[in-house]
Structure formats: C-alpha cells, structure tokens
Image 1 (cartoon, rainbow, N blue to C red):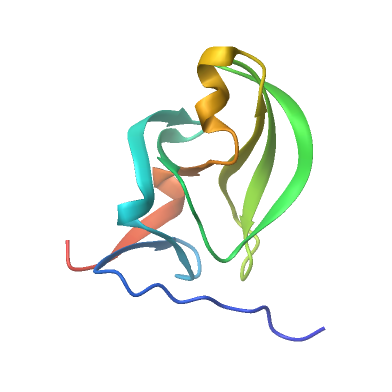
Image 2 (image 1 turned 120 degrees about the vertical axis):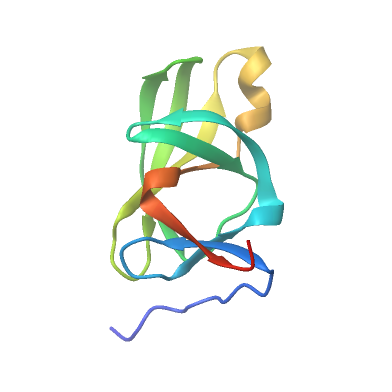
Length: 112
C-alpha cells in the first residue's frame, strides 16, 4: 500500500484538515454556512477533495432523517464531517450528494 493520492487546490481561499493540512475544500464551493455539526458550526459544500467515505448510516439530524456517510481525511483519517447520501423529506433533497465539513475540523489557508 503506497501513499494516498493527494489533490491540491489552486484557489486563493482553501480549507485544509486542521490535523495534517491536506486540502479539503475550496471556499468557492460553499453552498451554505448555516449548518450545525457535532462540534459546532459547519459548512455545506458542493465538492470536497482528499476524503474517503465511511459506511452509510441513517442519522436523525435537526432537519429530519437522512442517510449519511462520514468523510475522513485521506492522510490522517480524522473525521471532517459527512456526505448526505439520501434525504427522506422532500424539502431536504437539495442536500443529496453534498458534504458537511465542520468548522472545528478545518483551517483556512491562502489569502483571506
């Protein structure tokens, strides 16, 4: 088993894993900052990089029942948030295929 493939982001404002500083997401991919994670505020992203998915599980969240999979940093395996796989309520369907990254799990890099 070799080193994991590492993708670098080129944008001026990048979110990186707070543990190992692997790039995780571009600021331009934020869809909303009005989310709550297990450790405080969280952001909804349309795209993330350098993460692996955990097993799917049904989780009762503030907005109802969803099928989600935790997302882990490919380098240090820290849980950064989760991916929405399925939303059971029609009003929450827009989240499907999107990612939550918890603010406490990432750091800002670049020109802020």
